[in-house]
Amino acid sequence: MSYAIIVGSGFEEFATAGQPQRVDTRFGEPSAPIRPVDFGGSSVLVLPRHGDRHEFPPHLVNYRANLVALQDLGAASVIALNTVGVISDVREAGQVAVPDQVIDYTSGREHTIHNTPQPGFAHIEFTEPFSGGLRARILDAASKAGVDCYDGGVYAATQGPRLETAAEVDRLERDGADYVGMTGMPEASLAMELGLEYACLSMIVNKAAGRGEKPIHDDVESSTLSARSQAMKILDAFFESP
Image (cartoon, rainbow, N blue to C red; front, side, top):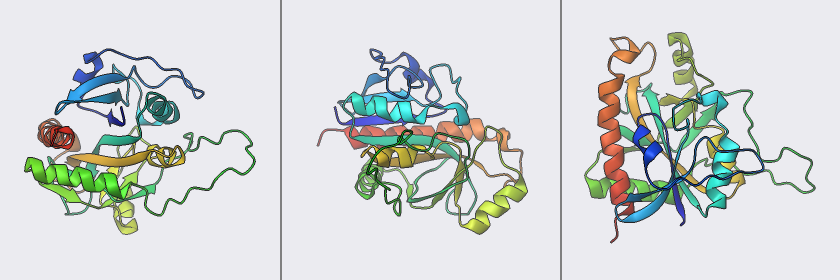
């Protein structure tokens, strides 16, 4: 089994799908048991990033254990679903995107698998933080599914769990960010250290702070349902047998 999906908010039904597989890694236990789930006729490993009860906020997720556990179970490619707010005008709430760059604003998280002295350890090149091949396949699946999925954009990974201030979002925009979320890092760089193919499928669920006319949470539920539906269509098309 070569593919895995890490799901974020809005996918609670996967907490009861499939036969759970518990894996203990050198970095501890992953957020939740990993389950094989059928997508388009293919069995895919699924891991809820925040736990079966959504108990782990972004800064407490054991990203290292999650990715190592998926790799130990045979995953070579990881599609990461996450919810984001949109900063620029590239997209609207309720739509989906596949970012091609990331800026890391997180702190205090375990950012590397190299936590002990290791002779000759490698400095990964992170110029392109997401797998180009996997991104292309996700975008092809979106086209096949008839879903309007934006190609590209810069993902700003913030620490959370609180949302950002309007002034902070202004800074992110000046830095060139299009989306803001809390889970893209260190997930992306850890995946690269492990040699995993990794890409984000981002569900846009709100306008970032100071960008909308309503309070952020007013439209999140309806936007999440819309973006989630599109993401599921993309996943079904991605794994559908030719």
